[in-house]
Structures are given as structure tokens and as C-alpha cells.
Amino acid sequence: MRPRGALPSPPYRRMPDDITALLQAWRSGDPGALEPAMPALYDALHEIASQRLRRESGNLTLDPTDLVHEAVVRLLGADKAYANRLHFLAVGALYMRSILTDRARAIRAGRRGGSGLTVTIGRAHGVADHDTLDLLALDDALRRLDAEDARAARVLELASFSGLQRDEIAEIVGVSVPTIDRDLRFARAWVSRALA
Image (cartoon, rainbow, N blue to C red):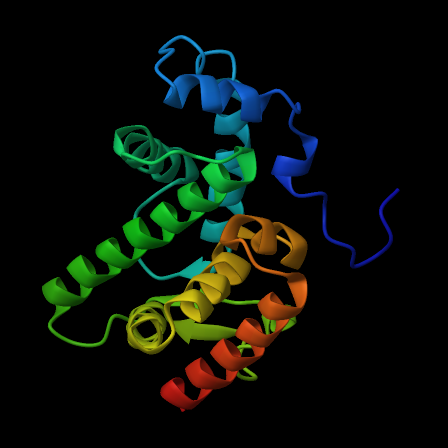
């Protein structure tokens, strides 16, 4: 039994280890290599989407399955060499963020005013002292941070939207865990100031 308040094991930690080998074979030109990997990848993406949508508020009119399908289309159509399953799922989570942001922009354009759409970022990630932030304001802040420090923006995106741990983010970004910690401290402070 999980201790009270403890988070469930992330979906990518329950995946078979051979997923990475299958992803690499697929990117090397074996179109059938992805087929045995997709059920596990799809389930993990669906869990990420479900968690993401539970933390959203507003009229995005998307269910987790729709969100996953849109993300998978982008993942499979992208010209990316996914280093491993963590990288694949992290990119998928960032595509989900992009899809939600695009939907929020479309809703805002239709309303001709504030979006009213918020995203919840856990206090563990330290963005201000707020539980919920305007989705479009956060997206704008991350874009401005990207112009100043692209790696810090990417690290905060991965920490906030993919559910990856610091060591996993370090592996994807290709830096040490202490560097990830510094980037997160900087990015949190920068975004907090931008949203103040």
C-alpha cells in the first residue's frame, strides 16, 4: 500500500526496458519495430494526459483519448530521433501542452477576452505560491524565458508538464542533476516574476 499523500509510480517506470530498443530500431528504419512498443507507450501517454486534464479547468472540450491521439500524430510525424522511452514520453507530454495551449488560444479568440483557462502546477515544482495559473500567461512566460535561457525553459517545462524526476530530466537534457537544480531555481524565479 502506498503511503498517504505519496504519488503513484509514473507510467514510464512501469514499462518494459525493451521499449528503448524498439524506438531506436523504428527510428533506424524498421517500421514494424514500433508496433509491439505502442500499447505500453500509448498507456503511459494516456495516463499522462489523464493527469494533465484533471489539473486543467475551463472549456477545453478534450478528453484524454483525444489529447493522446493528437500527441501521437505529432510524435510519429516528427523528425526526431528519440533517445529512449523517457525522451519519447517527455516529447509527448510537451506536445500535449502545446495542444492544450492551442485550444486555449482558440477559445480566447472566440470569447474576445480572458481565456479563463488555468493549469495547476504542483507546489513541488515551486512556480510562485499559486496552485493554478492562467494557461496562456504561463505559456507566454515560458516563451519569454526560452528567449533568455532555452535550457532553463525546457527544464521547467519537463518538470512541470511531463512528470519526470530531476535525474530523468538530466538524462534527457544531457547535463548533471545539480545543473538541473540550478536551472529549475532560475526558471521558477523568472516565471514567478513574469507572472507577478
